[in-house]
Image (cartoon, rainbow, N blue to C red; front, side, top):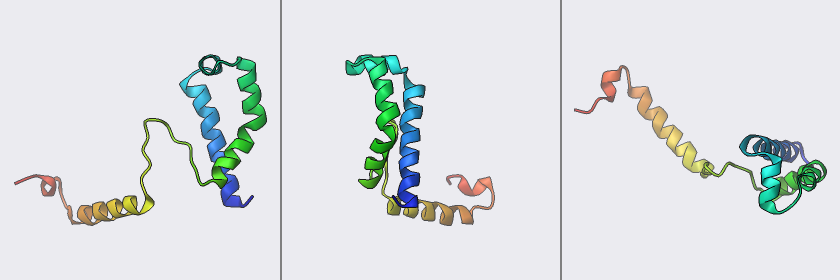
Length: 98
């Protein structure tokens, strides 16, 4: 695996493991899936790294359910417009409506 894919896979794996720890307990997740906590733990220990690599190779990312993904060119355009406008602002008064 290339360094970039390896880094992306590691980031995906980290995101998955952090979400399991942060958003709920493994017991609650396992119960909602209808499996034992030990089965979920085994899956995460044995397969999370490979699963993350599959997602990375497929060009996918893991994001929180309250997040939105936007195309890079769209975000670049927004940043450019914001920078251009903010470069004309000298004081707070320039931001006021007339």
